Amino acid sequence: MNLAPVFFIGPHIILFIVFILIPSVYGIYASFTRWNLVSDPVWVGLENYRTILFNEESTFSRQFFNGMKNTFIFVGASVPLMIVIPLMIAVSLEHKEVKMKNFFQTLIFIPGLISISAAALIWSLIFNRQLGVVNNVFGSEAVWASTQPYAWIIIIVITIWAGIGGNMIIYRASINGVSEDLYESAEIDGAGPVRKFFHVTLPSIRFPLIYTLIMSTAGAFNVFAQPLMMTDGGPRQSTTVLMMYIRDLAFSHGESIAGIASAMAVLLGLVILVISAIQYYLMSRNTA
Image (cartoon, rainbow, N blue to C red):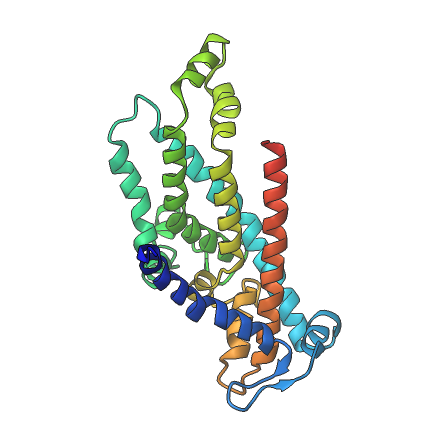
């Protein structure tokens, strides 16, 4: 019996079970309980879900729907940019006349290696009302983190700045794999750069596009650090995303309400699964 595969796969399986599978299963169980992280969980069935979804007078229900609304705003604003911008950069870097391709690729990818805390500190200084570069350059006195739509703008900017590098590398690698014969055939047929992009490049990299779209969407739904560090959920909770409510309910300074927090997390996970499945179905059908 060849045990070599076991030694390679085993550690990954163990880590998956310990840090992903077991916490996920216990989180689903906790969503059906009343639990404060100290005493034993008390089974309450679907009460947490009924409170969140149908009790309009409940604070938890208002928090959930406000958090979902703000999360959808972030997803809708950031995900298209996280796909389009790195794709355009990748296509531009693959142009024959562009020099120092790897240098520019590295320059764009480096922000993704910076911790979100350091990135938030950098951008909070850039958008500072008195000392910030943005206000000084444009002669503005905008209080970016305290007024809308500026609060969302700085959150989206830091997200794009830190996140486009990974997708760009995937697109560059995919574009490099497209056969030159396809482009030559398109040129013979009279296709220009735009037609070649839509009729050769995009169809040829459809699976990387599906992958990055699904992963970018799932990551955007789990947004937490950017609004926490940049706006602290303000102004007036207009940038308080669902993950911030979940954190506060589960690990608040007062009594923890981990059962409600777990139910919100499960509902968020279901939303991500459904939307990812719809995205995969639509893009697979349209690119088949």
